[in-house]
Length: 237
Image (cartoon, rainbow, N blue to C red; front, side):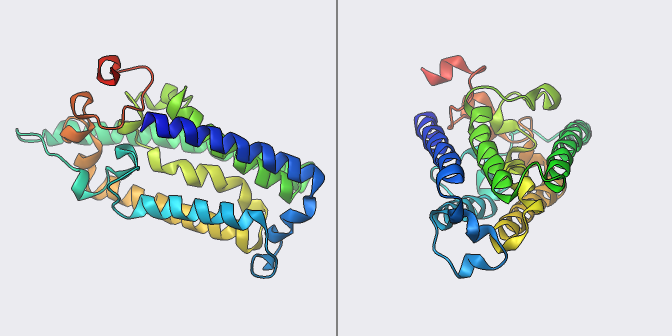
């Protein structure tokens, strides 16, 4: 899976470069972002929209192949309960601590998006710029998975598999598009919000699926993803 994700990162970098080039050479391509032009004009951006939608749908339905456990741990088919009785007091403390850290990240991200919105309304960033920023975040998402994640400084999680905010990625990625308007942007934001809501509801209803002390599937010894860069070195050999 790590090798596949490296190629995905390369692909995302290529997409970002192409979007930047089109922004300068063929800005008319981005006309699909305006209003209901999604249904009127054909554009390479339609293919990217479809890729993003498929990615998000794979986060709200159980998928067996090519999807990291960190993204699928909300589902019962990925839950491997520990043999002994779960310590509910420790589980509640874990949930409280990770949720507090998660919403620190949420607040910081909201401040960043507010700054982007302010620049947009000041005329510094247009709707094409908002789209390119979202594609940049699309690249940064896999940099966080494969190379280094700044959010780990706040979350203090061991790896992406145990990350409390793993499926926040699309909501964070598409949040600049809130200011773009139009069907193209808002449909992505709406679906990303649905993915986020499903994830958050599951953390409340099934917290035991998100903790490696209650879900054996999240432990290093049971790891199937091998995505982490700083831990579990022996497991990648």
